[in-house]
Image: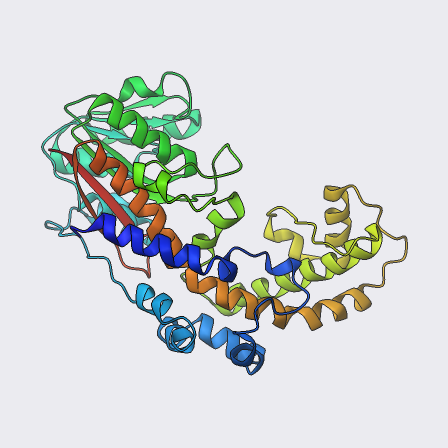
Length: 390
């Protein structure tokens, strides 16, 4: 993709023009917030909404009459980056789940094998170990968990490869010292600030090659995202953490159990929202944090007790769960209809974030490729930024 800046400008204009579609909190709405979508959305029952969510092409057709530019951007396909012969070997993948192994193998296949490697946020160092085996080059893996470091070192010793670990925090004061000029630095699914620091440190050190697959854009220390590139700062969208979560609202698989848990979680969150409005005497949304799915295995009363404790509310001694769940049932379709519209912007927003990172690297004198490194079946976070010093 040679025209990154014009594409970034086009997407910036689109996201700014239609920010009312996607910069919303569905749980805060008690009615549809848009008149132009009402006719389309009110004709959809819950099964129809779920079917559109599961079929991207049908979703783009659904929105094409109202938002043709949004449909067009969603059909824009990033190139699959040219990969050399597969670097994987089944015997090296013992103990690694299938999709994770596919991601590691495909990421490694995008890497040249002619310099030492720095593996950022390495875990047990599966990626680094694969590259060390295949290339014979030294690998230095950074990981803050000492248990994972020890396990990675033991695996390296068994294979007699040059694979060392540094047990330290990637956000710590000394992490930048690991970046060298003659080196390939790699970050597979580093979250938020971790991959932003990876880019800053790599650029500052003049590291020859930087390859990353970003993840969890919302995990940043500040309330709002600060674009990296000069053009990004000029076209800043004012993204907060809630906005940055939008690209992540996508699932690869949707088995019966997964769909049941999604349905249950949405219903219980809405039921608590109805309850908290009554308890506070305030008709406004009160967000709940993410929580372990085991909370969904009990009764709604247990979930409500946890949620009230989180928000400093007193749970009524006799909770009429059926009443609050019934109120949630009436709101669930509304929330799903609003989310359907917001989800039209998942890919454009992620593309904006990827382009901001790619443009930053271009500005620092790197040659940059932006594309995909694996199939969507393996992970929705399949985008790769590959930068080489010019």
